Image (cartoon, rainbow, N blue to C red):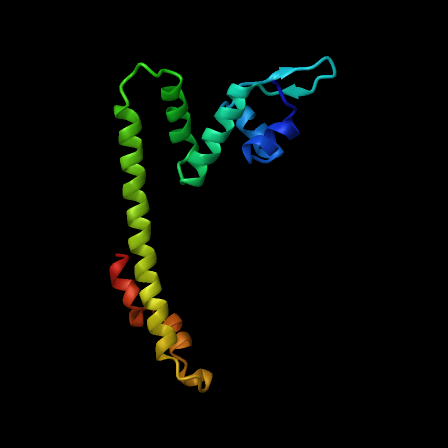
Amino acid sequence: MDVSIGGAARASGVKVPTIRYYEQIGLLPVPQRTQANRRLYAPQELRRLRFIRHARELGFEVEAIRTLLALQDRPDHSCEEADRLAREHLEQVERRIASLSALRRELMHMVEGCSHGRVAQCRVIETLDDHSLCAHHGESE
């Protein structure tokens, strides 16, 4: 059963403006229209919206999602490209995690070094003022 854009938003968890954006950039095909020019979404389009939403939640970029959707449309093809995209994305996530872990360590070091005295002796202010005191400084270069 076809649904309106509001129904599609509820069924997929994707907001109405985002659905329109996905249509505009070609991730979602232009839907059928009623006599009153209202969009109607078929079950396969709702499935596609849920696929896009889930891929975005996992952090895939729009172009990767476009490729994954094209692969989904050709179920008889090899999944080598999908695997490659997922591996590349995993590597990016692991790099971000490593960077965030280093950032966390530095912030913990700053906070633990703070004596809660005056600003003149504040480790947080001192570290932010002199980047060479930052342990994270050497890790990011």
